[in-house]
Image 1 (cartoon, one colour):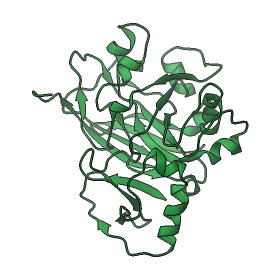
Image 2 (tube, rainbow, N blue to C red):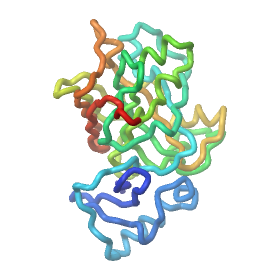
Image 3 (cartoon, rainbow, N blue to C red):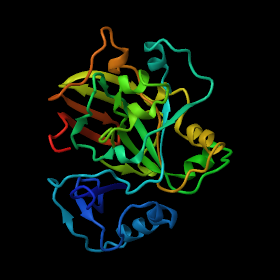
Image 4 (cartoon, one colour):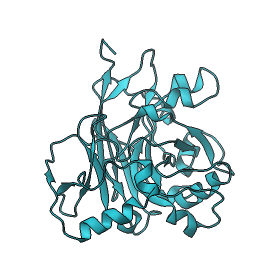
Amino acid sequence: MKLIRFGEPQHERPGVVLDDGTRLDVSEHFADYTPEFFAAGGLARLREVLAAGRRLRQVSAGLRLGPPVARPGKFVAVGLNYRNHAKEVGIPLPKEPEMFTKYTTCICGPDDAILIPKGSTRLDHELEVAFVVQTKSRYLESDEQALAHIAGLTICNDVSEREFQFDHGTQHVKGKSCDTFGPLGPWLVTLDELPDIGNLEMTLAVNGKTMQHSNTKDMIFNVPFVLRYLSRFFTLEAGDIVTTGTPAGVGAGAKPQRWLKAGDEVRLDITGLGTQTQRIQPLPADY
């Protein structure tokens, strides 16, 4: 299944996308795709609704898409998880996943504008595969167990402000959590629709020029390992989001370095997960 949330910010409703691209509204059956939805077995119930062939209202393709999960409790990120990215920034391959957090207030829809925060000088993009936790996860012992705890995958642009990230202390969170720094979507794709999550092509382009092109085969730590690893140290709850690192091609790794600026268009594509497109914009005067 492909889960979507559509409508204006803070007023999104839940829906699904069929194989032919048709969007359907399921809000008569489910209030939203919240942590409670996933924890209560909502995905199984959603499958039952679709299998029953009940009449569902069609949703216009022109309506805005929001992030595919509502009100996640945690937004966890993994850094340096692609071999080619570690090489481009000149850092040895990590022996264990490197972890930080993004505050959930940074989350926005897949095609919402990315706002340049006040004082920003080095705005950067990071193309990533993210997953959503389906079931409370702690001390997971196998990849099979971890995969059973994952609701699905989505695209994340782990937008980063490198001055905030590196020049104001050592906490990544300052450069990772500005408003609009967490576009998610367009869909949350359940694992049954993704035959090999270890072989997903991924591309990011700025103004039509490819900047990042890689494959999840280049991951140092794969998706189930990341969840197993994190579950050793803290409990992950249903609806939590984990984004799994970016491949080579970020602006910080370029020679010379390059940064996003107002008016730029960023497009992200990952096999089976859809497409995001964002325009870089200055903060509104009344922000």
